[in-house]
Amino acid sequence: ISRDDVRKAIDLAKWSPSACNRQSFKVYYVKDEEKVGEIIKIQRGLTHNAKNIRGALVITNRVEYYNKEYERNLSYVDGGMFSMSLMLALNNYNIANCPLSAAFAMDQEKAMRELLGISPRENLTVVLAIGSFPDEFKYAKSQRDSLDNFVIEI
Image 1 (cartoon, rainbow, N blue to C red):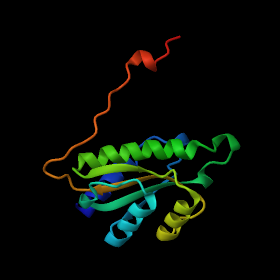
Image 2 (tube, helix red, strand yellow):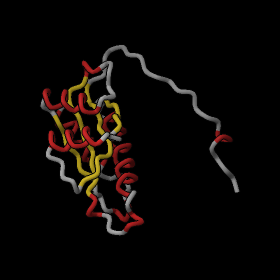
Image 3 (cartoon, rainbow, N blue to C red):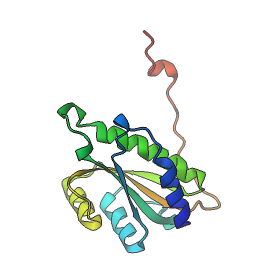
Image 4 (cartoon, rainbow, N blue to C red):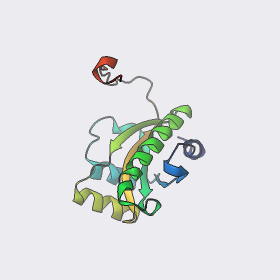
């Protein structure tokens, strides 16, 4: 995958909405193969199809951008919206991506912070494995609920 295309995708994703336009997100673009392997080990969720992974994007949000106790979850909302924008932007540049949960146990979070030098003032939001699309692949297709199961009209 092209470094320039990854950077263009990140640049495009920066237009994602955020609370009060704070833009608290930060992206750790990891290209080093050994570190990418360590990220996958720390994350513990990707068990198949890792051969096409060429990098990782670790998205964090800086907590100092939120200053009230009732804003304590906004970094995760902003981080989620930015991550979705980034996934769409990566697809636009034909870069395969897979969101991996950053809902870490304490040992995982500590290891990830140490590996990448992530400040304690940043909330870990999402890990995106990035790479190339194989010529043929299988993917999960989930049934979607009908609108009546989750839309409440008042």
